[in-house]
Image (tube, rainbow, N blue to C red):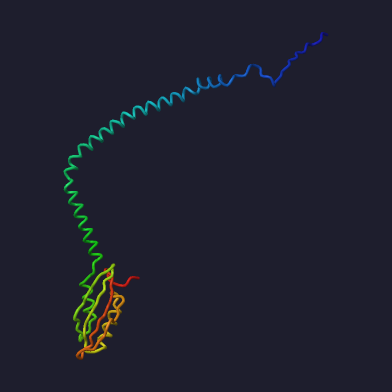
Amino acid sequence: MPKAKSLLIKLDLLKPQSNPEKLPVKAFRWLLSSGRYIFVLVEALVLIAFGARFKLDADLAAKKEAIEEQIPYIESLKPYEILIRQTQLKLATIDNVKKSSVDWDKILTKIAGQTPATAKISSINISKTLGVATVHIIGQTPASSDITSFITGLKEDNFFTNVNLASVGLEEGFIKFTIDASTTPGGGKNL
């Protein structure tokens, strides 16, 4: 019998069968296959931006024309604006003076409410310095209890602070007195 012929193939898996592709060749193939889509997308974005530029320039020109049409109307309102600003300044000044000034009517009403019936007030001096109104009361009474009740009433009233009997004297059967008190422009004690 004849001997069977055996087929023997030598296979080396570690060696490449063909020459490997170089990096520039791989990059060129990638650019030809996938890179063209990226190129088309970038070109489309550039064309969209170019077209949008014309639209936005037209919108800007239209807005500028609309603004320029309004300029004469706005300039015609300038005297009214000046008048309104002057009025606002006057109102702010009046409000500031009103807030910082002394309420004369309230001070006199409070003093009149606390004055005993037999006491006579000969003078009231009110002066304002640094946001505090100082009240200087000069009067006379036949009884010393009137002075005590007058001072106690002023001290108990929250409108006045620092109520003090400045001087007391006896003249012609009457007790003459001087009382000093303070109040803030808003009135009352500061807490």
